[in-house]
Image 1: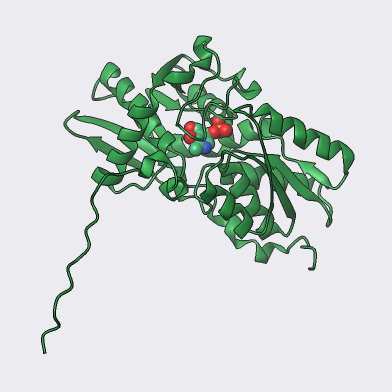
Image 2 (image 1 turned 120 degrees about the vertical axis):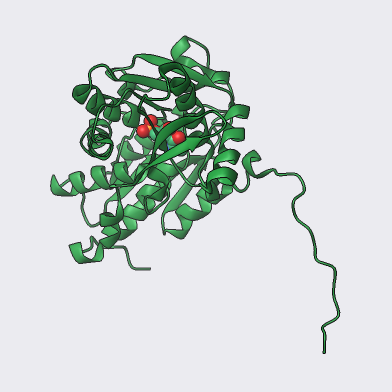
Length: 325
Ligand SMILES: Cc1ncc(COP(=O)(O)O)c(C=O)c1O
């Protein structure tokens, strides 16, 4: 098989579809509350992570860090892997993703479908294992280029200059609160900085799974809000301008995600539901006039094999009818 080669600009059209996502006002009844939701699930690979993949790989290419035989390597629980596989394909680079064997099968298939290689590892819930393996691989083979999503400052800068400024432009006035979950912390730190700089009184709030409230000093434990809270406080969150935190249970997150599907027709993943639960709590506290912003992070299709889609009943088989002649 021919190795991929870096592609010319005109072959990279997909990159222009990343970012500039709509900010949609969602009116919740009977609560009588409004939330502004940045629709990151509309990015071309289906999640907010397209921004990171594009930002880091274009930067690496511009700085001469990528060669024709480079292999982009990252440890990801799913969305970053899919985003890197998509952007890597469009830019013409090989991609290898390290993923915990517990990651949903949809994510694995998408990564393979985009032409990337997948290496599964047993982690017993310990995400750091994958990061350590990726470092060892990079130390042994100079073709590997590590995107280092957990420590790369570009992850924060991209959200500060991109997502955060887009939100400010789209709201066009004061923001009272911004709330988001965190995986690497890039989104929360970057958007938080941009919003705080423009509106110093805005409350920047971290959403955490109640089963694993690390910012409250709790220990890692299992939860079902995929994409956030990987079992440690990420270094990029250290200089995030955080004012408060809100805990959301996995059950609350799933119930709200199904409500987003059925009441709003928004096919998003579980962390989006969790973000909305947290945003509604802020809205209830700050009053109906407050402008509260959060994110819809990824698409529902990524969760077909998870508990989110365990719906009882609902399907019927039509009885055979004679065809009228
Ligand atoms: C599915 C999903 N992906 C990504 C993110 C953001 O992650 P990060 O902190 O790595 O920017 C979130 C945050 O809520 C998320 O829910």
